[in-house]
Amino acid sequence: MHRVKVRVVEDALDANNTIARANRDDFERHGVTVLNVMSAPGAGKTTLLEAVLREGVGDLRVGVLEGDVQGSLDADRLAHLHIPVTQLNTGNGFGGECHLDANMVRSALPALPLDEIDLLIVENVGNLVCPAEFAIGEDARIMVASVAEGDDKPGKYPLMFRTCELVVVNKIDLLAHTDFSMERFDYYLDAVHPGVERMQVSARTGEGVEDVRAWLARLPDRAEAPA
Amino acid sequence: MHRVKVRVVEDALDANNTIARANRDDFERHGVTVLNVMSAPGAGKTTLLEAVLREGVGDLRVGVLEGDVQGSLDADRLAHLHIPVTQLNTGNGFGGECHLDANMVRSALPALPLDEIDLLIVENVGNLVCPAEFAIGEDARIMVASVAEGDDKPGKYPLMFRTCELVVVNKIDLLAHTDFSMERFDYYLDAVHPGVERMQVSARTGEGVEDVRAWLARLPDRAEAPA
Image (cartoon, rainbow over all chains, first blue to last red; front, side, top):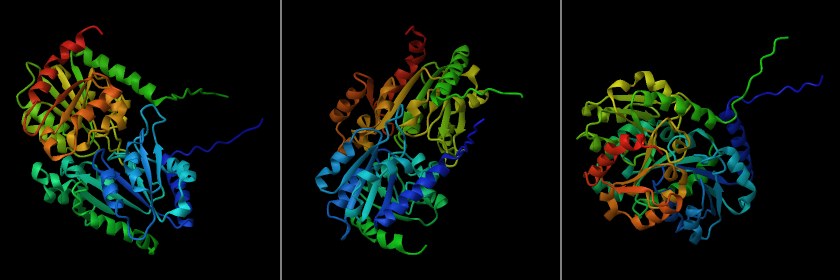
């Protein structure tokens, strides 16, 4: 009797990490630094990217991979920047996947002009839970938190704030119109990720955007530096 | 040789629906109407509940089931209302589950005082994708969308807005300070759920809260009416 022994990969995250490493190898071979941008829905990732990329990021050639459940609303908003934007929809399941995973990003690799860019910015699906659990082959992660969401979010969604290199507090133009306390936010943030780098920004008014741009411009050097 | 045939439940959503029906039977047996409140993180579900429940919901005895990845920040905020609040944490996985499912709610049933309440309000995990896919045994769903999230969200997360009976647009006190257009929001909303009932509210200032309270007070009668 012919028998086939099937080894079940029990841990989906383990499989994801394997693929993420393969993605990372491919990105490195092409000299592309990859940034994973995460936030809740409506925190302003796309508006921030528009504001940052409008004037370019130093000498870097930038490409964007847009993750959305469905549609291309965000990609359309970036079209005027005249940089390569690739749309990746997660909506093949019943209601769509709530995050990007390494395999989805892998499926997008053939569509990415890796030889023509130095920095790939991946805008993840808006969600404060699952994107943090799935590496996609990135060198760094930015977490964007909106003032309008309230100052308690690091305490409620700790993994997101723990697994990023930079926390951007966006919509600071709304500070005067909400009960958001930066002191409380910092308190909750330091409890889950002590001392993580943070910036205060209004993508809408442009305040603080230059800081994010400068951080992005330094990213390839930091990614190359030995850990 | 002893053989055991294992039937694999291939569709996790199918299993979820089976458990959701069991939950619903239990709720009905106790005469409890169940409302599933969904939104993105920071849209203001808890603040809205505080504002609504502060003055009670007609003659209804209300209980709350708080779904969170971890912690009890929201439940603590409701403590002063002197109604039964039960905390349900989804954080047993690596980074926690991004939604409530029927089985999680089932595990909370013994902790719920079903004989002492008429209306159970379940505050789901903040997320615009997966909560819509998982019935928990509810009679109705409310979707809370914040003005600060932008007016395009129904177009980007259609299932959430399609599977609810009421859309509450919260934080209308921020209308003057954002680029949110109610007309565009309605356009996107009607494209995915034509004519769904909607209300404009500021849980912070109290504007429109009475409408939500009145809707909740009518909910048991509507749930009992033949479909």
